[in-house]
Length: 367
Image (tube, rainbow, N blue to C red; front, top):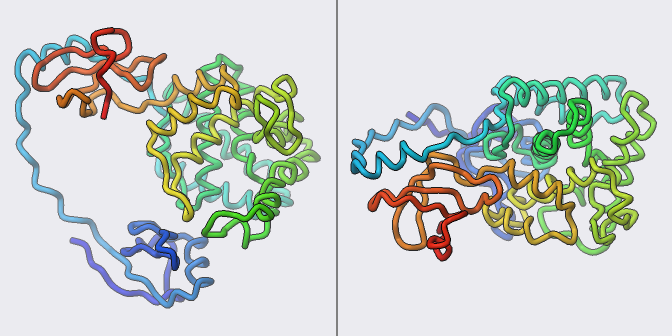
């Protein structure tokens, strides 16, 4: 049973779960209901003058289990006949998530610390171990969630996705490891951006955005003299907003001038930004974000994009989807080169719909 009670902001403690949404004057959500409070969120509540919030304790009573309706024999037979397991996804244990979250927050607050490099390598070791222990070849960012604070969560998401993309491309363990470091630190320059711009709960003005765009170069300045890191890492941080058509920043590099690491970081960075909700914008669905990525062929590296697209699973095997012909269907196989169009089995007809290869299914979409 859940208990709900009011706590003054000065008495809030890390780990408490908030039982209300905190919104700004334009009705934009700043803190979502159900968020576990950490020092960053508590400080934000204090700065905004929030006198107190409702907190919840306990767990909701479990929903009574609904009896499972048995599938018709033909449906069950075709599911069993065609079902193919998804590639293994990266999984982080709760203890690793906590350690990684605390480590990333430390990095962004202590860029001049003597422990900066050792903390970075410790976090990257955790991510590398999670990928190698399960031989993961796919990622589901919805289950990573190491922090409720955007910059920290985004850094871990980008690092993890970039490492999986690098693995898909067949890069060496050393390169995968270095890309993990670059992903963790790609936004390090934001630690030098004025807080009123970095944490502004609204769209930035042109002048503010010009300041925000300096974070790539600021990150490079922080890292370039840290001899513990290979030189390609600060360069990747500098270039992660460069575009293949030369219209990126800060240098407007051409495709040939952009390092392979930065090309990978760019894809992961764009995707994670699209699917993450911010105070000033709603998140896009994973499907919409993938479609947007696929349309960015002039800006993103094709090789990195293809490796990314084969690493993200939109419709996990055994999930139920609604088809545009009105039938519900069970996902039985994902097609690596066509992630928007898996193979499914209709739960009423038992029909096998190979949405990627069967031309008779060309007009059928997943709603």
